[in-house]
Length: 136
Image (cartoon, rainbow, N blue to C red; front, side, top):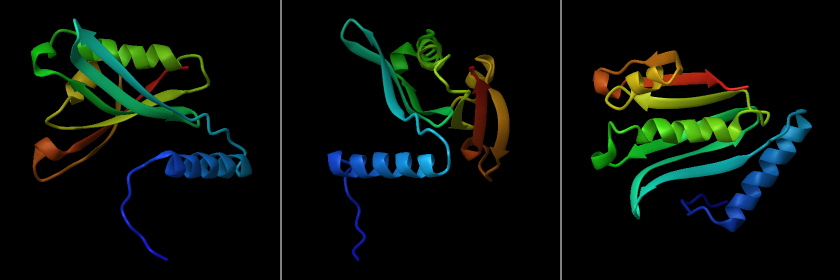
């Protein structure tokens, strides 16, 4: 057996989807899997992007990036709201995400996300914050 790093492609995606789906069914849960990417665009310029995955009963925000020129203008809040709106009432119970201390813990608190846990680091900027918001 060989183990090597590869790029995700149709073949790896198909394997992942089949195995996650089959295992979930064996355990009595629906996979309910979907990747997402929402983009804020201003006259052809990307202002921000939010990505993630929805699966089982949870939506997970992976990345939220707002361009420097657009920070503090509400773009990030609007992108998070787009995810919340897209998945509310579709069988997902919560949105989960993580952020580092130097990134956006206060931003997510302001949007109603509850802090579940902080994994402290010697460098407080690299402490990791785990957030959750119920969306039923």
